[in-house]
Image 1 (tube, rainbow, N blue to C red):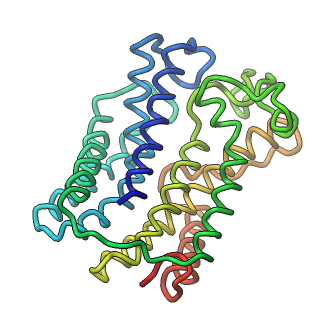
Image 2 (cartoon, rainbow, N blue to C red; image 1 turned 90 degrees about the vertical axis):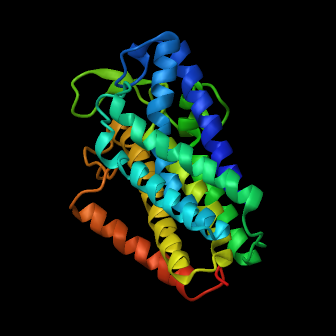
Length: 295
């Protein structure tokens, strides 16, 4: 269960960072918010909890339900999953002030955390079944993702990388640049939360939870969880690349082409490619090999 708690701690720290940054920094220097001070901070944190933590919950819920081996836990996990699934309908990236509809995925996340606590206290203990090669692969990919997420970690905390040795040279962050398709200028990487940071958190979630796949006893749940984590990893990396490409390539004027927006599910070639990539990850790493955690 340690991996699951690490996931929730990471999202908790991000929530605190969002709250503090949106409380401290005026809305004009942030993105698509209008409230300021405490109201701005708590509101944006509320919206954040209803987004990527809700997506992460899809990887957590099958694992904790399997550990609990309790019909009530299965029903609560289904309810939590249904509530978290509303994230696809209630989030509006162009308007990030809180709405009543944001409550549904937030409640789903709360249920997922409660089920985690229940499983930690009463669930079946399982040792981690993985391999050294699998953990090395996780560490390497995690380190690469962490490096490229550096501008967004800084933005989450409310500062730019200008003047930071090496990172300030590699990444353009505080420089004013035209916002593609918007007709105004803004800091290349605005202060506050970015979906690239969601990408970092969800990639970490997928990598951590994949260590627990071998401990899932119900074959159907193991397959479902592996498939969800495969898609979560692809989704996370694509969103990180999307943000990076816009802010580090397009805003430098090197090209006008943008990596497609895949923040929400839709019928598109980009989502089709993501599903193919997720299927490949599942087949190569989860379906037949012990590399990333299969029994």
